[in-house]
Figure 1 (cartoon, rainbow, N blue to C red):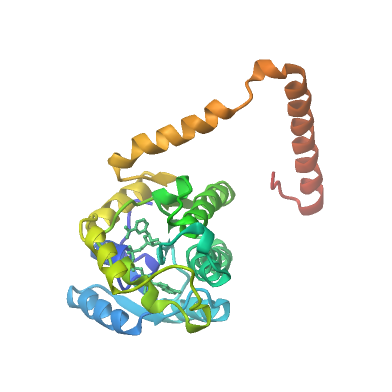
Figure 2: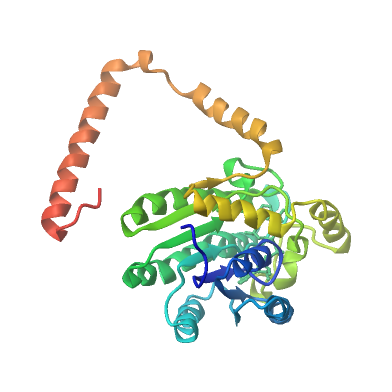
Length: 306
Ligand code: NAI
């Protein structure tokens, strides 16, 4: 996608941080903006700022873990702007830090629910609508560099973000025939409000194994204030869409660590020389199965899903 003028953009977490930066940048490029966020107060001030710059913007208070509410939000977008979004930004996310071994079910349900479940809900809600519209589209989900590697201090968050990266790789393949591009953004540090994530943690999921108090929040804010400016980050996103790139990776300082991590994985692999016959047999079986499955699916559906 090269031209954003008049495009409908739906941005989760659009009231703060990275999502608000996307709303500003794509709004300035002429897109019609919907910001969806759980925080009503932040939505109000974000809308005021966007409209103050002449950006056409609509706000929806949404807890994206609520699937019925998500469907209602999608209906609202169609009523307000006359169609489903052509740009979907799954940007909302939450974080909380603590020792992995102290994690409770509620820590899992909240962090996985928003970071991975929220993206899943965005895809299941909007992808069929975007396909039905028959228009060019692009989806950007925000993961994190944490999604490339586990971490003792943010295990659930990293697992959720790994899921987002992997899921976008799959959707990228699936949606290409519909002229819908898919990208995944992996930030490292954004100047945002994510340090205050626990403000929106639901009461029913309050039981945590981690220590979250004013001191720990202040310490998080101490690092995020040095993060990338959200509009600058959104510029990387815009270029990623224009160039239809799968991975948007704007933090050069992280590359060496990720390289080392993937090299460890490759080094751990059993080399081909260790089992050439077994490898050849399994490869041939997989190729046959893929061909037969494609033929079977073509017979059943008239389409090829393999
Ligand atoms: P932020 O806290 O400034 O913005 C996130 C927005 O998501 C907030 O407005 C919040 O109200 C909203 N939100 C939270 N839970 C929600 C829910 N259940 N339903 C709807 N909206 C909800 O944080 P930031 O940093 O802008 O985060 C954006 C994305 O970037 C997130 O996916 C985050 O995980 C990711 N990220 C952030 C990094 C950072 O350093 N801040 C680093 C790597 C990734």
